[in-house]
Length: 83
Image (cartoon, rainbow, N blue to C red; front, side, top):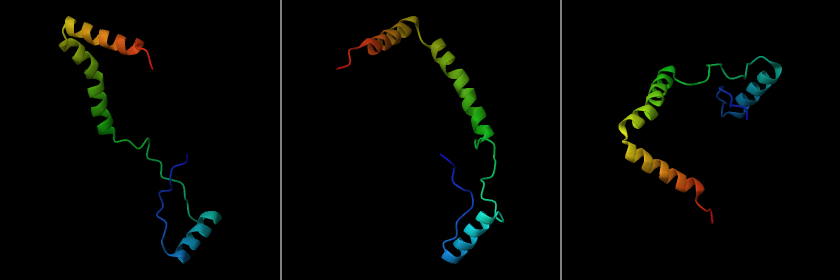
């Protein structure tokens, strides 16, 4: 699905008609501005740091007994009969 245009459309019908003619004739560029992938690099870095630590930190903090209980619960849920 194409992204919406970054150009604000005027509410006045005459101005809107002029803009449409300008886009059709090529006087006005209607393509959205290229801003990479649209994500904030700082937020991406922070999210990646948390994601890299998460599973390993949780596994290190769990006891063998607790890990076994989690695994058994997951196996029961995976193989449970769906009615």
